[in-house]
Length: 467
Image (cartoon, rainbow, N blue to C red; front, top):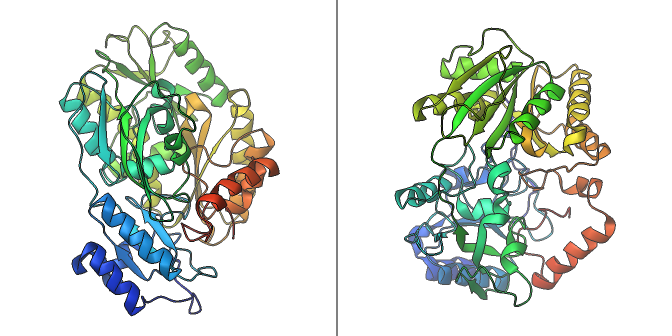
């Protein structure tokens, strides 16, 4: 197995005495980590494709401490890499293997910023520190009789700040939208060490630029998010979940369309391919849930009161339906454990694109044809979020640093008018392909914002925009 290792000429790896002293003063010596045996978990992405050197990992425990760390690094001319749960898939949550002109960064971990407020029952909102896990936010909301609309399989390891910085999507976008739709307030440290704090959660606040929305999807390039205020929702009374066999993406989309026309809210509409089903069955010791083997299996969750009346199933459908919580969770496991299952095969190219729904079937077919044209591919999966045109690709076989197949997949999505990143972000690995789906005018406008806020170019350099 190939693991991305730092090169010998990767730039300064150690702290100067003055910067080390300043960081210790800011957060305490116990929270300035320099031993490679300790910092390793922060410098390698969990996919094992990407890793790089850092000078130190710093773990601030408050917004003021984050600000002090940023000011110290900027004064020393040292780049800063904000990090949440390090669950990213595009090389954006870890240092580059060969740092740019400024050398290796200081990683600022948000994990200690984990406080979660009580739920405001009048507004249906809560405030969470950037280091709180998504799962903890869910549990805090549910304990107070609410739900948080953003959900994904990495809920117990990803952080709320990271999901905002990447504008995460997940399994409930059809019902609640991307993360940006849930953010009603933000607190963040800017590259000059100043703090902006706008956490009142006003739903009507027409006073200029929405800086919280700007931080959504900024991938840490504009500053470090320290706290987020999010809107919550009242839970549906009950839902029904079904796995349904389909012959291909065209029939899967037709099934999903009928579900949306049925009059009940669709909470999730996912699709799993045959290879992914087999892998998850082996990983989780699950049986094949349907009578026949199908090219695709569609998962539908409908808020129909839990009686199955909202599921668009006729007598010919090969389907299994769950009505109680444990059975619903079991059916969801076939979808939610896809990425984990592929990861057991070694280093995997995990790609994430989106295309207009009208082009989804044709694009998916072309992607599979393209993948199969590479003899080095040993296993692959084409699955994802059916309702929002988001296809996930898991490709096993190419070396970790072989970007040819990645480029081909992204170019295919672009040909269909799609995006090279539906929800994982651009990170480092897709930065050079940004022009596939954004015009030169759009990229220049984004760079102008970045340059205005971060004139030294020290806040997460190399992410979003190629150096």
